[in-house]
Image 1 (cartoon, rainbow, N blue to C red):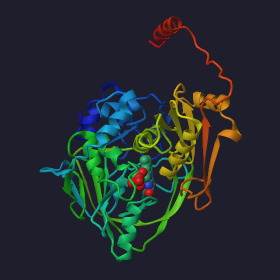
Image 2 (image 1 turned 180 degrees about the vertical axis):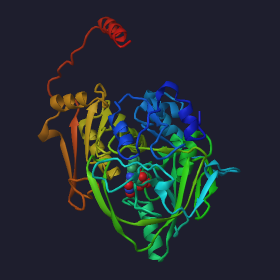
Image 3 (image 1 turned 120 degrees about the vertical axis):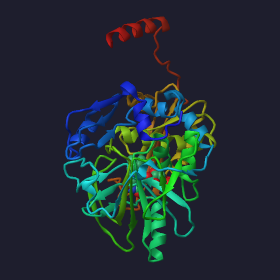
Image 4 (image 1 turned 90 degrees about the vertical axis):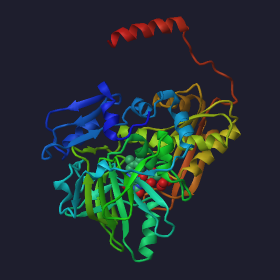
Length: 448
Ligand SMILES: Cc1cc2nc3c(=O)[nH]c(=O)nc-3n(C[C@H](O)[C@H](O)[C@H](O)COP(=O)(O)O)c2cc1C
């Protein structure tokens, strides 16, 4: 089932959505709740946001994989395959007749914070940061559309700092600057899950139009509408759109901001001058806490599942792949079946090269649960021999937010092959199925 917008997805969550009716402040307090929610917690809707009567803030939308599975009308165990199959469909967007996101229009707003409850997340953050802003623009050189989540620092008045660490948007901005022109951008906030996830699919320089990818994931085209003050098409059913221009030749300090790596990161970044803000009546502002389960799920689907799909076409026996929680997509575990050691080495090198942000990868047999760190550590402890099973790749590009290699070209990557070796075969311990079933029945009563 395709959800037309974020609010219809939230309405369908039932008990899996926590309605927070007590007053919470967008400065620190909402982020503190989002950070404190346990892994299995429901999504949260803050209905009483201090200083913003009528506004609501949603968060932890993807903290549990079951909610993403629901968004795509599938189950958790079929999610990766459903994602890969649906993505192939590529359904082009259409231009909508009506645009709920333009129900309220603020031309040239003087102060963004007077309109939107942008969250301040961490003690040493340089200010409020928008963390789920899908930045949309077209390449002045080719007319190609680009979109991705980019962190945005509210700098006061009409200015936003934007971290452009990744193509295609960094390239589009460079192309505009080489012409001495500002780059029209629109920032969509509060999207239904498919469009948000499609925006962070790792696509490469010749990648598909992510709006068509979103359409494929939904099974229906995304509805777009022309922004009011810039030459950009925006999702008609977003909750909020901020319109503006990235100023050519301008760079300012942007940060510090507590990143998906779990560390503060400051950059010298381009600046957006806001030209309009549009939103729906009773808009819902979307929160996303960095270095959280929410981010883990976004990355695991948009980057991890993509990589899994690529590797399955290249190496026989690749069963599953998981980007390890909390690692900002720098570490992965891959499960294989019947994959000889030399093929596992090739797999490691392919994975590390295909994803430029991936730094370590561990290959295990498919009897190991790759989403359980204890099991992956156990495979490393009992099936991996350092001298025999380590692959090191030197001379890799360091990623800007990775504290171990930021700003240097001396990045390196490693693969660990923790599959059963050629040595004597040890039998993994087991228990009789009937005894385990009886134990499960007991546990089920304890949880009631
Ligand atoms: C939660 C999250 C936050 C991100 N923040 C930024 C950012 O601040 N700056 C940036 O350049 N890329 C950021 N990215 C990555 C871009 O959205 C990127 O375009 C996306 O991963 C797609 O990859 P592509 O560059 O291959 O198209 C972020 C990704 C995620 C999932």
